[in-house]
Image 1 (tube, protein in one colour):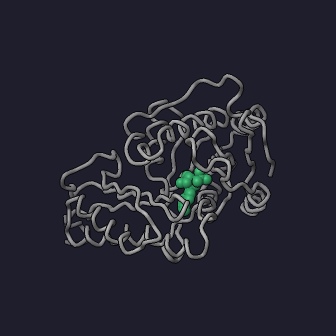
Image 2: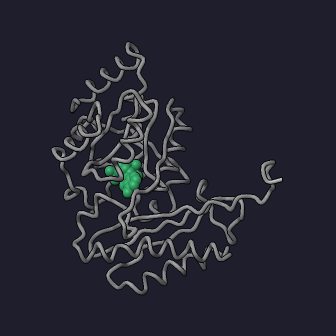
Length: 295
Ligand code: AMP
């Protein structure tokens, strides 16, 4: 495993692998402080691709003023140990000035999908994400790029970015990895104490409650949002910032949820000073047509 810090070096290594060795390249973009959620992406990349590159870069462009860019957990030594256990080929860990050289002035905005939910809460966040991914995709030219469902809106933004700008790669999205309590793994969980961690289980509990209400037949998105809110009402240590109930592919809002479309329920909440996000997708019930095997 090699750790690469320079953009030029990363580009030339990737070029050689592609052109001379005809290897498929899988990229797992991360901000480091790796946990089982990240590692699930790495495992799948390892399974699917000849060469696995994990980028570890706390991207300043996706943090707003007053957010946790400075104190975001950084542990390249620990990350390196974990990734060598997973047989990763390259860690790309550039300094900010490698990604954003002097006078950097070109940014990528994915309109529409970037605007609701996280877009309202964190203006400029997805512009930072789309921009850094554009630089990473152009540097490495991966065949596959791996993302977690944990960041549901990000996956939609990334798919749109890849389609619209014609990146020649396939986006692979993998399920959210959770603790036993349901709490989604996140590098930011490191900010939580034992008590905060227990309180943070309310995020998934609330989403699960909304799913129950949906499965009982409720199709009014406001009622599903109420089901989420009522769980937060019973957990004083957590504060709900928003909950959105939208089409899982288009983020379109509905007055009444259609039966034939997947529904995304996504939320952000604060536990003490820590901001967390989580979501679930409810797939439409399978159509009740009889298959040949059943007849
Ligand atoms: P981050 O380091 O937070 O930027 O995350 C890097 C990638 O790991 C993103 O695609 C995330 O969606 C994904 N990820 C983070 N947490 C989880 C999790 N609990 N389960 C699955 N994927 C995750």
